[in-house]
Amino acid sequence: MADIKRLAGMLQELDDLLTRCMRCGMCQAQCPVFARTGREADVTRGKLALLSGLSREMLTDPAQVREKIDTCLLCGTCEANCPSGVRVTDIFLRARAILNGYMGLSPSQRLIFRRMLPRPKLMNALLSMSALFQGLFSKEADPVIGSSCARFNAPLIRDRHFKKLASKPLHRQVPSVDTPAGASGLKVAFFPGCLTDKIYPGVGQAALKIFKHHQVGVYMPAGQACCGIPALSSGEAEAFSSLVRQNVELFSAAKWDYLVTPCATCTATMHKLWPEYHRGSLGRVITDNIMDVSQFMVDVLGLKPFQSEAEKTLVAYHDPCHLRNSMKITAQPRSLIEAGGRHTVAELPGGPSCCGSGGSFNLKHYKLSTEIGLEKARAIGAANAPVAATGCPACMLQLTDMMSREHVSIPIRHVLEIYAETI
Image (cartoon, rainbow, N blue to C red; front, side, top):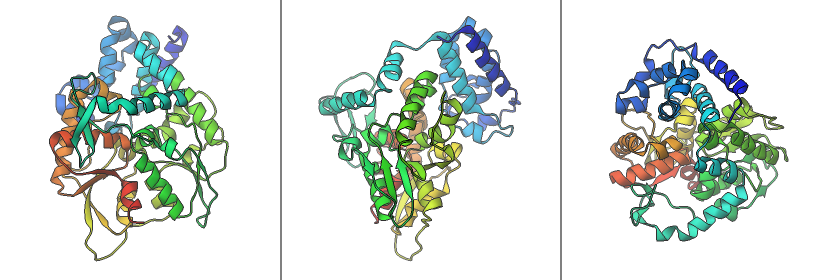
């Protein structure tokens, strides 16, 4: 647990951030959780009111406070639309760190965040072992989507439709890469992220294919760790810094122009949260050069939608919250989809909205996550496109579950895969 002096300092920092909230209630119209529950305690304004007396509430009912603060997707929709510019995500992350310092982690969280995530080799070994035996516990649900479901009433997965672990993760297919810049004159450091590595290696292979096609050098070192967002969003700042430190050491060992990742969550974490929450130096890693891969392809390489009269395949595109809200990236993934000349974007009815994943939110509040996600699945189905795409593997996982359960039987691809198949 954190010492009292440190907790007091963290509470003061939190109070300073809370002063900007005018309690106007604009967040009510934006929050996907409030849209489902209608409870004031579930909207940002209600949570911020609770946090204004956090030091008192922690002494009376800390478990209840944690429950309310955890009932948040951290999607950033409220922050992106706040007229007062309240740093909502920052407030909730700091509040979770304070509660964690006061209450401590659960045994399972200590095991995952302090023993497993900071040891990539151990994590890889455990998940490789799990991949060998996952067929005993799962069966095919929808072959078009590639979803599976539990064979029997197993904990955690019993109600879910899920994408199985890859039989051969990316780090075994391509252990490392270090190629020089070609005609582009550019070299990128490539951070696939955990989900690309272990569940969607095809996304990583698509990225490498595109880099090679455009003669971009690649530095992809072995032994990459998690970006740290699972630990940070659970209030575990020390584990977060440990993960950042490992990755910074790896990427500081070579020269490159941009650090790119195909995961919206990793992009936002590395670009915005690494410099804010990491207790240590970022070395040679310059966060302004950390980019989403579609942002790099469009803004740096100059890819544009290919104009032609040929008939194109519609692609229903879902905006990941961490790209749309945190990074303000919306046009680039759409441009990448259309850059190959074979596809055109079909916008979803109702406009952009959260898919309901939220990382640990999906684990702790699956019923609520499902209610939000099924609505997104129906919107994708209503777009009448033969394929869906997004720019975040975490969204792909959630959409796999929701679309499979809703019988919206169309494949879910990453925007990289859509473009890569055209070159």
